[in-house]
Image (cartoon, rainbow, N blue to C red):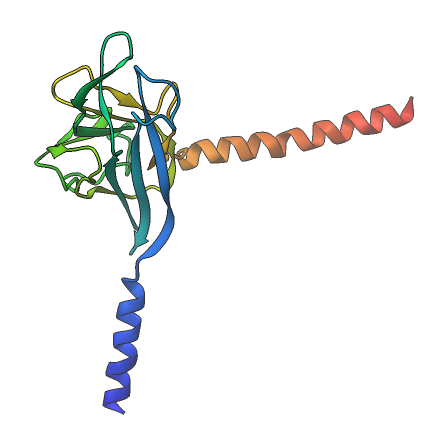
Length: 202
Protein backbone atom coordinates (compact mmCIF):
# COMPACT_ATOMS: atom_id res chain seq x y z
CA UNK A 1 0.00 0.00 0.00
CA UNK A 2 2.73 2.45 1.02
CA UNK A 3 4.76 1.50 -2.06
CA UNK A 4 1.74 2.18 -4.27
CA UNK A 5 1.24 5.61 -2.72
CA UNK A 6 4.92 6.46 -3.30
CA UNK A 7 4.65 5.21 -6.90
CA UNK A 8 1.61 7.36 -7.70
CA UNK A 9 3.10 10.38 -5.94
CA UNK A 10 6.16 9.95 -8.13
CA UNK A 11 4.00 9.88 -11.26
CA UNK A 12 2.12 12.99 -10.12
CA UNK A 13 5.37 14.83 -9.43
CA UNK A 14 6.87 13.92 -12.80
CA UNK A 15 3.66 14.94 -14.57
CA UNK A 16 3.58 18.28 -12.77
CA UNK A 17 7.11 19.01 -14.02
CA UNK A 18 6.68 17.50 -17.49
CA UNK A 19 7.97 19.68 -20.28
CA UNK A 20 5.60 20.25 -23.20
CA UNK A 21 6.86 21.49 -26.55
CA UNK A 22 4.64 24.41 -27.57
CA UNK A 23 6.33 25.10 -30.90
CA UNK A 24 9.65 24.54 -32.67
CA UNK A 25 11.18 25.17 -36.05
CA UNK A 26 13.72 27.23 -37.95
CA UNK A 27 13.87 30.77 -39.32
CA UNK A 28 16.29 32.53 -41.63
CA UNK A 29 17.96 35.84 -40.84
CA UNK A 30 18.85 37.63 -44.05
CA UNK A 31 22.18 39.40 -44.58
CA UNK A 32 21.26 43.03 -45.20
CA UNK A 33 23.77 43.13 -48.08
CA UNK A 34 22.33 40.03 -49.76
CA UNK A 35 18.85 39.36 -51.09
CA UNK A 36 16.37 36.95 -49.59
CA UNK A 37 16.33 34.59 -46.60
CA UNK A 38 17.44 31.59 -48.70
CA UNK A 39 20.72 33.24 -49.72
CA UNK A 40 23.93 31.42 -48.84
CA UNK A 41 24.74 34.48 -46.74
CA UNK A 42 21.71 34.05 -44.46
CA UNK A 43 21.84 32.51 -40.99
CA UNK A 44 19.59 29.71 -39.73
CA UNK A 45 17.98 30.16 -36.29
CA UNK A 46 16.84 26.89 -34.71
CA UNK A 47 14.20 27.60 -32.06
CA UNK A 48 11.89 25.91 -29.58
CA UNK A 49 9.41 27.02 -26.92
CA UNK A 50 8.52 24.63 -24.10
CA UNK A 51 6.15 24.87 -21.14
CA UNK A 52 6.79 23.38 -17.71
CA UNK A 53 5.01 24.24 -14.45
CA UNK A 54 3.52 27.34 -16.04
CA UNK A 55 6.90 28.69 -17.22
CA UNK A 56 7.74 29.08 -20.91
CA UNK A 57 11.36 28.46 -21.91
CA UNK A 58 12.52 30.03 -25.17
CA UNK A 59 15.64 28.50 -26.75
CA UNK A 60 17.59 29.41 -29.87
CA UNK A 61 20.78 28.33 -31.63
CA UNK A 62 22.49 29.84 -34.67
CA UNK A 63 23.72 27.80 -37.65
CA UNK A 64 26.17 29.59 -39.93
CA UNK A 65 25.84 28.18 -43.45
CA UNK A 66 28.84 26.53 -45.13
CA UNK A 67 30.47 28.91 -47.59
CA UNK A 68 29.31 32.07 -45.81
CA UNK A 69 31.78 34.84 -46.68
CA UNK A 70 32.08 38.54 -46.01
CA UNK A 71 30.43 40.76 -48.58
CA UNK A 72 31.94 44.04 -49.66
CA UNK A 73 30.02 47.33 -49.58
CA UNK A 74 28.58 46.52 -53.01
CA UNK A 75 27.20 43.21 -51.76
CA UNK A 76 29.77 41.16 -53.69
CA UNK A 77 31.40 38.11 -52.02
CA UNK A 78 35.01 38.23 -50.85
CA UNK A 79 37.33 35.33 -50.00
CA UNK A 80 37.07 35.97 -46.23
CA UNK A 81 34.90 33.54 -44.20
CA UNK A 82 32.08 35.26 -42.29
CA UNK A 83 31.56 34.58 -38.58
CA UNK A 84 28.69 35.43 -36.22
CA UNK A 85 29.21 36.16 -32.52
CA UNK A 86 26.12 37.96 -31.23
CA UNK A 87 22.35 37.44 -31.35
CA UNK A 88 19.31 39.26 -29.99
CA UNK A 89 15.52 38.93 -29.88
CA UNK A 90 13.38 42.06 -29.70
CA UNK A 91 10.48 42.47 -27.26
CA UNK A 92 9.59 44.65 -24.29
CA UNK A 93 11.35 42.82 -21.46
CA UNK A 94 9.78 45.18 -18.90
CA UNK A 95 6.23 44.10 -19.80
CA UNK A 96 4.78 42.15 -16.83
CA UNK A 97 5.70 38.47 -17.14
CA UNK A 98 7.47 38.83 -20.49
CA UNK A 99 10.93 38.08 -19.09
CA UNK A 100 11.75 36.33 -15.83
CA UNK A 101 14.65 38.37 -14.49
CA UNK A 102 17.98 36.56 -14.41
CA UNK A 103 16.80 33.62 -16.53
CA UNK A 104 18.82 34.54 -19.64
CA UNK A 105 21.59 31.99 -20.28
CA UNK A 106 23.88 30.45 -22.87
CA UNK A 107 26.19 33.22 -24.04
CA UNK A 108 29.62 34.25 -22.89
CA UNK A 109 27.90 37.57 -22.13
CA UNK A 110 24.11 37.88 -21.76
CA UNK A 111 22.22 41.14 -21.36
CA UNK A 112 18.71 42.47 -20.79
CA UNK A 113 18.48 45.76 -22.73
CA UNK A 114 14.76 46.30 -21.90
CA UNK A 115 13.90 46.43 -25.63
CA UNK A 116 15.61 43.11 -26.34
CA UNK A 117 17.66 40.27 -24.88
CA UNK A 118 21.13 39.78 -26.35
CA UNK A 119 23.83 37.12 -26.24
CA UNK A 120 27.52 37.50 -27.14
CA UNK A 121 29.37 34.25 -27.74
CA UNK A 122 32.41 32.51 -29.21
CA UNK A 123 32.60 33.05 -32.96
CA UNK A 124 30.51 30.62 -35.00
CA UNK A 125 32.36 29.81 -38.21
CA UNK A 126 30.73 28.81 -41.52
CA UNK A 127 29.38 25.27 -41.36
CA UNK A 128 29.06 25.23 -37.55
CA UNK A 129 26.32 25.86 -34.96
CA UNK A 130 26.36 27.89 -31.77
CA UNK A 131 25.54 26.83 -28.24
CA UNK A 132 21.90 27.08 -27.10
CA UNK A 133 20.69 30.48 -25.86
CA UNK A 134 17.64 30.65 -23.61
CA UNK A 135 15.43 32.63 -21.28
CA UNK A 136 12.20 32.08 -19.35
CA UNK A 137 8.86 33.88 -19.49
CA UNK A 138 5.38 33.70 -18.01
CA UNK A 139 3.89 34.52 -21.42
CA UNK A 140 3.15 32.32 -24.47
CA UNK A 141 4.84 32.94 -27.82
CA UNK A 142 4.07 35.15 -30.75
CA UNK A 143 6.43 35.93 -33.65
CA UNK A 144 8.92 38.80 -33.43
CA UNK A 145 12.20 40.05 -34.83
CA UNK A 146 15.72 38.78 -34.27
CA UNK A 147 19.13 40.17 -35.21
CA UNK A 148 22.65 38.80 -35.35
CA UNK A 149 26.06 40.27 -36.10
CA UNK A 150 29.81 39.90 -36.09
CA UNK A 151 31.66 42.26 -33.78
CA UNK A 152 33.66 43.37 -36.84
CA UNK A 153 31.15 44.74 -39.42
CA UNK A 154 29.98 44.62 -42.12
CA UNK A 155 27.96 41.65 -40.96
CA UNK A 156 24.38 42.41 -39.94
CA UNK A 157 21.63 39.79 -40.23
CA UNK A 158 17.99 40.45 -39.42
CA UNK A 159 14.41 39.22 -39.59
CA UNK A 160 13.51 42.43 -41.43
CA UNK A 161 13.07 43.34 -44.16
CA UNK A 162 13.95 40.10 -45.99
CA UNK A 163 14.33 37.54 -43.21
CA UNK A 164 11.89 35.57 -41.06
CA UNK A 165 10.47 36.03 -37.56
CA UNK A 166 11.23 33.97 -34.44
CA UNK A 167 9.15 33.25 -31.31
CA UNK A 168 9.14 35.90 -28.56
CA UNK A 169 6.76 36.41 -25.61
CA UNK A 170 3.32 37.78 -26.45
CA UNK A 171 2.16 40.93 -24.69
CA UNK A 172 -1.39 40.02 -23.64
CA UNK A 173 -4.05 42.61 -22.75
CA UNK A 174 -4.66 43.28 -19.06
CA UNK A 175 -7.87 41.69 -17.66
CA UNK A 176 -9.42 45.16 -17.46
CA UNK A 177 -8.84 45.57 -21.21
CA UNK A 178 -10.55 42.25 -21.93
CA UNK A 179 -13.49 43.26 -19.72
CA UNK A 180 -13.79 46.57 -21.56
CA UNK A 181 -13.88 44.78 -24.91
CA UNK A 182 -16.43 42.25 -23.69
CA UNK A 183 -18.68 44.84 -22.02
CA UNK A 184 -18.54 46.97 -25.16
CA UNK A 185 -19.65 44.03 -27.28
CA UNK A 186 -22.47 43.14 -24.87
CA UNK A 187 -23.64 46.76 -24.69
CA UNK A 188 -23.83 46.86 -28.47
CA UNK A 189 -26.23 43.90 -28.68
CA UNK A 190 -29.43 45.77 -27.59
CA UNK A 191 -28.60 48.52 -30.10
CA UNK A 192 -28.34 46.02 -32.93
CA UNK A 193 -31.63 44.38 -31.83
CA UNK A 194 -33.39 47.79 -31.75
CA UNK A 195 -32.10 48.64 -35.22
CA UNK A 196 -33.40 45.34 -36.61
CA UNK A 197 -36.83 45.86 -34.97
CA UNK A 198 -37.03 49.41 -36.35
CA UNK A 199 -36.16 48.12 -39.82
CA UNK A 200 -38.97 45.53 -39.66
CA UNK A 201 -41.60 48.16 -38.70
CA UNK A 202 -40.84 50.35 -41.71
